[in-house]
Structures are given as structure tokens and as C-alpha cells.
Image (tube, rainbow, N blue to C red; front, side):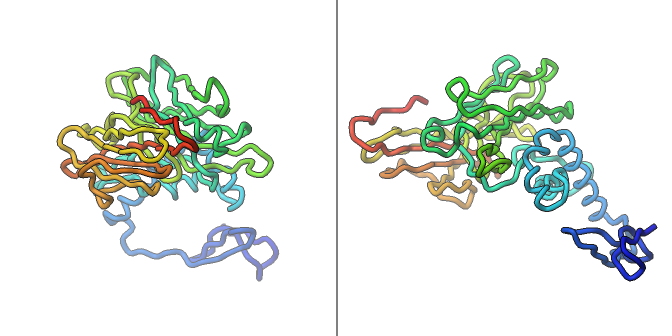
Length: 335
């Protein structure tokens, strides 16, 4: 039954015949119901299943999604999970209901215009996830002392997630998150995003960084090292994708940083994979520059690379090469 707010000639909320009324941005709006002669076509069933899968995923990641979309949800007068679903539904992949899967490597748990930061290589030791913030972010003022990093771990098999807000100045900027013991021998995905806490950016979030996936047979080892638009992360080997067991190891980016005048960059990959890279901060794809030989940098640059074999892409490796302000600071960075 529809409910009128101000009388029979005013807007109403609910369904009235073939018209539905609702409140949008403070105004009452009415539209005709979509009519269909066959509500159970394959395309519709597929769409509903996709929606159900990503909605469930958002519910399992509720704590992170609540914080990551809170400001945008308040501005748009909608729900955090609704925004999460809209931003991530395209990451439910597959063309049959039976084989639909969520690509957990691409999930965005936050939304905002706060600038992302560079994270180092993540790892899990015992039941503790740890990742560092690259020093350049701390002293180059990309993050302030009042900003917070939300560190997130997600175990889809158990439908369980952990989210913790961590300061940017703790333990030499090494961030940690304790995981449940029952997560041992399960695939775990890790993410991070920054939340402003100063008076001028309070509640404003960055886009989400995918930090890596950690084994199927046990927790531990190094992260996959990946990148999503809006920030960077370290390099490492891909622990696998949600869509299957076939994986390609992420490439290794080598070079001197910081450097005085120029530095030569080389990128290597295993398994005879082809390497594609970018130097403009964008996420590389198979349409990016194909790596064929070492190249030279003469300015501060972020290099990102992927390895591709048999149409399977690795996670993204990222390395920041910083030109020093003076000479005498050049030296090889440890790999």
C-alpha cells in the first residue's frame, strides 16, 4: 500500500498500481514499474545472482564497507552497502549461474577523493598480517599524523573479515592486523585504505589498495603485491586468483633508488611470461608498453608492471624510483 505524505495530490511512498513512489535526494519521485513478459530469462537470473553474490560479500565485509563508504553514503542519502554493490558488481565474473565468482583482487571497500598512499610488500607471519607505509608518504606529506589506515583481511571461504584502524606513525609505519587462528590453511585477501581525520578531510577516504592473497594451504609468506587505481603496493608473487588455481607470478622490478641523475630499470618475470609496464601511474594491462629491454629514468617515477601468459595476468608489481635532491645518495635498494 502506498503512503501519501501531504495529501492526495502530493508525492507518495510505495506501490500504487503500476506506479512506484520513493524519496530521492529529499524529493518525492514517482515512476512506472518496469514491465516484463518473462521475468525468468537467463540474463535476469544471471543478473540477480550477481547482485546476490556481491551483496553477500559486502555484508561479510560490513565493518570495512561501513567506514569506507560512510561519507559518500551520507552525502547521497543512501546506504554504504548499496554503494559497495554498485561499485563492485562488475567484479562478479562468469557467464553461467553455476560458475559465477567474485574477483576479490579488484574489490573496492571505500570511496573518496583522498589521495592514496604507497604500501610496501605485505606478509602474514603466524596469525599477523603486516604491511609498511613507504617512507616517502610519511615525509612527503601524502599522509598526516592524524590520518588513519584501515587494514582489512577477508577469508571468503569462512565468510569472515577483520578490519582495524591503524595510525600512520606506529612502529616505524609498519601496520599490523591480528587474524583468527581458524583462518589457518584458508585463502586470505588483504586490503587497505586511508581515512582522513584532520579538520579539513575528516571522514574522506581513499580508494582501496589490494595488498595480496595468501595461500590455500597455510597462512604465511609474502603478499602478491598489487595495485588498484588510486594507490600503489609492493611487488611479489601471486598467490592465486578467486577464479581458479592457474596463476602467473608477478614480475620483479629492479633499479637504484634513490638516485642522483639517472637510474636504469629492469623487469624480470618467470615462466616465459610477457611483461607490460607503465610509468605514468596508471595500472598496466596487455595494451600497455611491452617490456623488451632495460630503460632509463631521470626523474622521480612510479613503475608498474604485470606478467601475462596464456591470457592470464599476474597481480601488479609497483616500485617508486626517487630522484634525490643532491649527489652522493645513490645506492642500490635492497630487493
